[in-house]
Image 1 (cartoon, rainbow, N blue to C red):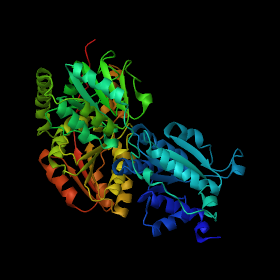
Image 2: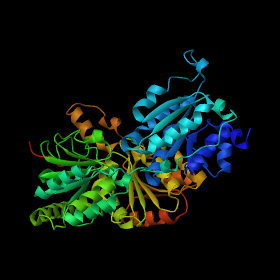
Image 3: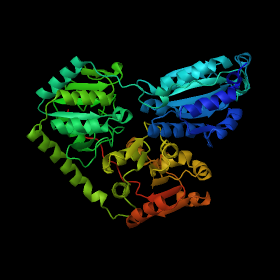
Image 4: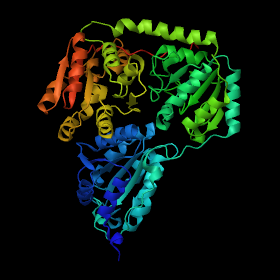
Length: 561
């Protein structure tokens, strides 16, 4: 038997990951311990986390920043937690490969200790969800996992490996050395070109429109299509809004930028999209958040939709002119099909005035000297201090709204990623992002409610030298829900604060106790120096900014009935 056929299962898994460009594996012990030994020899960092959800979030952040598959793993009893952590990667179309252990077939359906059926839990949050029961399945199924994770609309995949720790597969011998298909190392592996007739139809709609607007979704970032988006907008004089996931795909100080549209939005963007007579969606699923429950634009507005997934075309807006293809290639084809134009001067003046009025309304809060500090002031300091190559990571809820409306990304080298809905995602995802881009500054913006989920990963960050900066908007509570809590109480007596209030704990002190850098900021003038020091400290850092619990993020503008 040749030397090539003497690879063990453990060595096969390690070499396969290495050849697919995986530099970090995020996991909770115990899983693939023999493979971990080989991974070290191959240069893969094994990042042991304090929870399976955090491991999944780290893999997610790693995938979104690197464009390569992020890998996370857990033993059998941790599979349920890992599956829960994949929801965000699924919603954000991030290529993540999840590996779990599963007791052998003779243990199934016999009340095995710590064992439940994994398949149903992973099915809603993966593109591909399979059991690996025999060693000879590994070569085929590992290749398929990376192929499925990166193609089309990217997303998570799951391999359930036989053995609680996958030991049965690890000890197998006689496997061939991994054959890696290089095309699937990163997204997008293919750039399908759109049908020329669909480009012609879309171009004709743009020529006929008096008030067109582009809406850039997360697919623009995944495709690397930001430059092509701006080129089309500038060629034809078309304003640009973005979804929260698409934020940063156009310089937000650009004259054609109108901001983030939808439920987590600046009102100027919602007004502009509402007033448009043609909305051109690029790489956007047109879900309830981007369209503010399908009110912006109103159903019946003429829509062009560019997407790699034909199932998305017209899903929410009947009569959509659909263009199936890679976002970058489709935008380039559409740009070539249109002659240069300054656009509708009145429409451009209108959108610029909307932006100016919105900025003027927000300006006093951004410059506020109040104490407790206003979150808008934090966002103003972040806008000023973000390095040109920074990665900004935001949690969901109020954190996402503050960043979407108040932080301006002004450099094409700046990257923004945010939670697709899972509170607590931000901090561990930032750690994964830093692993993917160790030479770039990574700043996470989260609230105390989000940071509480996974602050134990500060120890992980310190242990592995993952030096991110976490800015915590600390108001000692779940402030986003306060208005509704008070409405539900009305005039009834009771203790409404019990539903949202936390104890006052210093995250900065916790950070210092864990060997990290930390500062509690209670004066607005101290925000900028603290962030600057955190960026330069050479440790994982926490900037805890004490804010007022009554501060409300902007409500989305809604069209009149």
